[in-house]
Image (cartoon, rainbow, N blue to C red; front, side, top):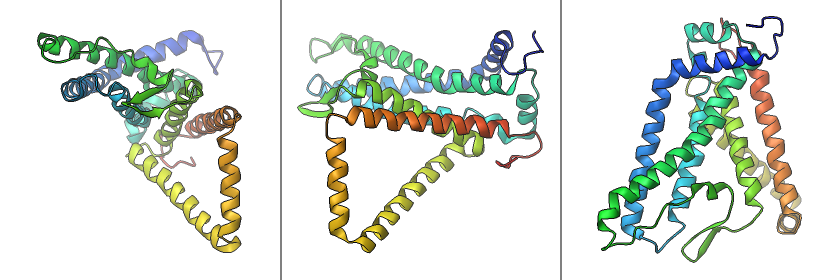
Length: 275
């Protein structure tokens, strides 16, 4: 094993990756089986109730489950930091700090995204197998490609839920940005990370709303209305894709960069974020 390069070494990285997968395989397996069971139940119930009347229903439900579970998985990436023996095991292993960070980011964010869609496809095949006996009495749609969630618009009946081709790019970027946010929360607050990150997120939103109300009271409603009209006109024009993509790219760089920076400052003795 190369111990000269303390930034990144492929052999050391793959060894750390195998170590994390072996040590956490039970928890990972239980999590994926739970997601598979939940998706199977939702798809079977949705098929029985709606059939093919609302073709976008599976996409909509799976997308909601997907966004929440990505946040939860990312929030649990650095759960070892909650206890001293976990911090000792994580922070004093032979791999470099960058390798440790990349291992957790790869398994609990990027790897989870891939695993989720595998579970979704298996759940859909299970739906077909479970309901095929009744296909003469109810409509049982064929296999659904759930990768369309991140690559194309979908509809719920006649009502379009997502209708912009821009989402082919922005949806994956938004998921990666959310994963980075909760990954940062996992480093910053290892204990109850998901709840604390959600609380901080809504806290920021409340502050923004309050500041908006104060700004409106100071400058007057007419000025605020004018600013809102200009804002809406920008984001409803042809340049919306550039603004939206740029916004998500900034979030990705900010959240993932801060997660890496905060992780570098962690130590075995203390959980304090500034250490």
